[in-house]
Length: 131
View 1: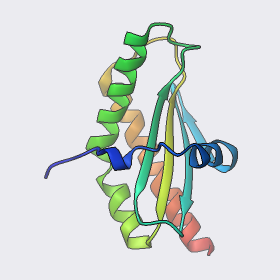
View 2 (view 1 turned 90 degrees about the vertical axis):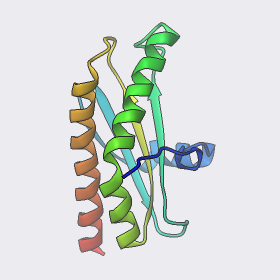
View 3 (view 1 turned 180 degrees about the vertical axis):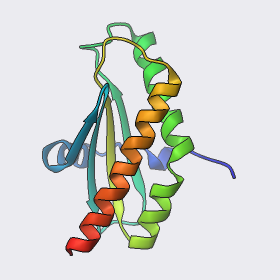
């Protein structure tokens, strides 16, 4: 199976980003913060924002390395989330915010990403039961 992270999966809308940071559900597993909000009115898709702050990582090269690792970990492990969103007829906006001043290994980032993606699955399942 081939895994993609296409341009249309990237969260670029300023309104959607603002809504995500204001009213999204969040969880934190050091050093990655997750923000998540689901929608029912839009087409079924999962839009993702990956960010590393200049506040913590001063060099652009370091920020780019971290963002590349986050995107790759998401790309390889997002298939379950995408299937679940199609089953539930939902769309979602997700932000991964890197909050450490040290660059950690890809293996640790991937393990944390898997935990965050399982957390998203639980949130979707729980919201489906509540409604």
